[in-house]
Length: 300
Image (cartoon, rainbow, N blue to C red):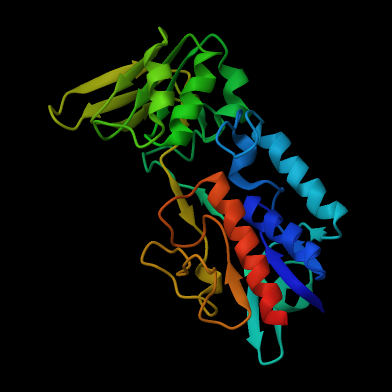
């Protein structure tokens, strides 16, 4: 029996582990894949208070080590379900069953697919969802990035340092991401924008050789040669398995405010997985702290 069991080892989950341990509680973190969450793929973080520059990997590793040094236990297992019993929560994974007094769900989000034919077939053969993971394979080649948020902009900036040409395709006429990054991209000679446009087809047989782009205003279709297609069109939550504990929004996010409390006593949520206006590194850390403090207060 642990005091606080945390599902997810991203920024929110690991911050919750830090605060839970510092409150003198026993803490267990369960994570299906690797620690760090989405931020681990960011090459340069410049907007976290007090840290001018840090890679996502270094940030996540430092936070992971901090939680471990404070006493948090971490196990890499896939959480399948959580039972809410009168005196405890029972957490079932693909390997074990655990008992906890409180649970913090910090499940994060997953990458959204573009939804174009042959996208899945060509994943790993030119289609990628992680520029920092795969960008080096396309050094000196032409690539396409799809998306309009910070991830797409950061991917384009990263790839512009490696690739001969980067074409950034966005379905709207303006970007959602940071204006500073947009202006920096505009100043790059090897970056071009195709706005009000959608990728409608992926070209090539065994590997990506280009994409077909359709302008939403004129209907004109353009073929863009490319060896790689990097997709950054948003994220989706994976919370259905926990709907017995917390209400879900129509989009699938946990319904909770800044208190991080759910409708179930002793169950809290933190990070990008909950309903919120802004999903940033700082807000994920804030949620983790709030959820852990709320769980500790609940324990009395």
